[in-house]
Image (tube, rainbow, N blue to C red; front, side, top):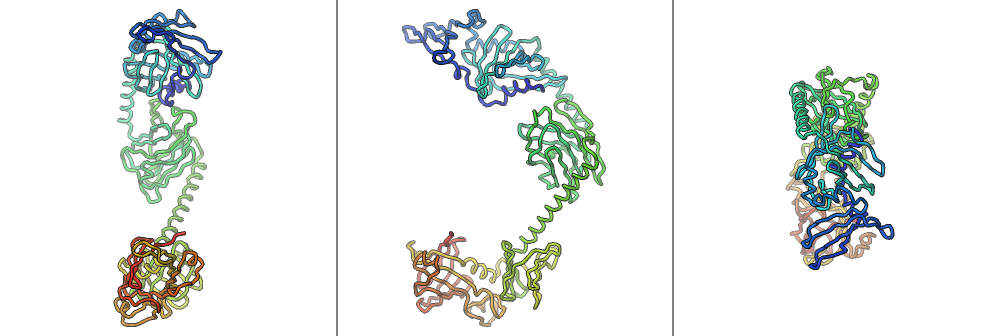
Length: 584
């Protein structure tokens, strides 16, 4: 499409709303009124200050109806002799009297002959119809139009001024980016039916193409996006396209993305295939949607090279349908050498493999995260993916590990290794210089998991308030005795709790410590200042906690009720308190 045609259609369909021309460099003022107060004469001025000039006068009867118009710059103008055309109905009758063709365009004071651009306008009572004809093809667009008094129309939300030059010529005037734009139209002998018949013929031809072609590629072009479409009668396993007139930005949908094909592209070339051996089934598909930037305009966008492969890499016979030429074309692969294509393909395959390798490593680490147990629950292991740290009841050490993905294991130093036992990644083996242990995922209702979890939950600084919400104290929980010297899972304080989950054996009594402070400043500096400081706490049951200190009253009803990740209630000293986590 030629440049001028693009400008005209852009004015009609794409520009933001244009202001009235009269709002910019003209003003109109009533200078005389009838005895009944209605306007009698209105003057139209152009310019400002000393440069202001009278350019027209409107004359009205006693009822306010326009009856005369004087063009001060051209007293014999066509509109001066046909005042009725200044009214909305007169303007509508004039513009809907035939088909108009753009003759000239004046933009930024430069006039261009537009007669060869083949842009035609047909106006009805409520629509503006644009026809662009090039060779045997025709493009049609339609938008709403409204007619107003004083030679104004509103075209799809844009206010434009009309100047009627003669029975067979008018000009359309607007402002865009402070530039005055004038398009002159002349009436033609072409009939609307001639244009619509051409459109119907094109649509019929297009329909026949889509019915007869079994394997077809075409493009749907929007303002900032482009859809690559495909109709295929055979399964497609691989694709390569080269585009002209457009820069490919990002992939934003389509069959290939939805079905996880390995798709890569630069600004003009795209390749798609599947490491998993997937194929595109027979049918009609939106292969891929691209965010794009057009080099000039959409009409110059096309596919200049394409390869589509079937099973085993066999090349499939596809055609490309050019929407603007309404033709089916056979596109070759002469745009580049086979060596260049192979080099690009190998590069993208390597990048895809590296990305897949990184994803596998991430998955490996993520799956290890959390708690693991031996079959009899005598031992546990906790892996923290954030710092690759291992805490375990197997010994008192904490391990910091490095990933050795080639051997699918973690090297934790001092001869300690962690790796999966099976391919399903649900059994691990941890070994050090002394022994080797097989561990399994935690059960959701595992009691030891609860104890570990609540210990981790309690760690940190808290603000304590009473039942009325008044500040009581500040505190810090620590549980540095987690794990046991005697290789038991957890040091439990009382035999009563211990018999519930394990055996009648009694283990060490110390589980953790609770430090209480009178002020936040003392808490931050960890300065003891009360008799409550350094209380030992332990669990007497799954949801009960015991505080042991000589100044605390004995209370068999102590408990912890977790409200959320940063709030819990607890009873001690025979009163209930609310604990709020202090987050810096």
